[in-house]
Amino acid sequence: APLVYLSNPDNPMGSWWEAPDVVRFIEALPETTMLVLDEAYGELGPASALPAIDVARPNVIRMRTFSKAYGLAGIRCGYAVAEAEVIRDFEKIRNHYGVSRMAQIAGLEALADQDYLRTVVARVAAGRERISTVARQNDLKPLPSATNFVTIDCGRDGAFALTVMQGLLSRDVFIRKPMVPRLDRCIRVSVGLDHELDIFAEELPGALAAARGN
Image (cartoon, rainbow, N blue to C red; front, top):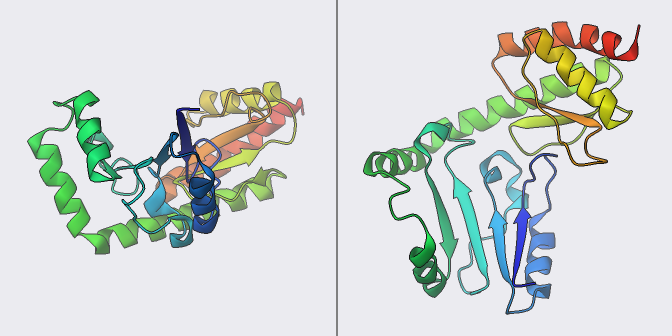
């Protein structure tokens, strides 16, 4: 294939590959295949999931964003890391007006404030654990996550998971779910503020009971 796309950590499941696995994957690719390595959630996962920055390979381009851990989704700012010639070629096809001057300044300031980033990462990790605990208390299976959400296996089929999601939506709790078969048996719950997770914990049992016909 001329291009391979790998999301690590992954959306919508939250799973991740360790850096040595990613490196072995890169080394196994033909030189004529470009790997787009999407690391949008990279700051939220374990450091062991991210290979060291290496721009020596011309067939790898790594994508990162300020939309996740940095909480700056509204400014639509991200960046790519790759070998210099690849970046020059990339410049020819990207939207040249995609990132405003203000967004660039905000991105640089965000990079400079690593103390804040560490605080956010810790809070997100605590939120993931809270969601996982709520899931287990309701006999559901939370999947390990390196993102700002937790994917929860509802244990049945896609129709059941969809009913659970709709039940939560009817209770003013907004969640999402994968729609691809086999993954669609899951729901996806984003980390929120403490009081928002309290509401999720309160409303999930009722949504499950309705979906189960209890």
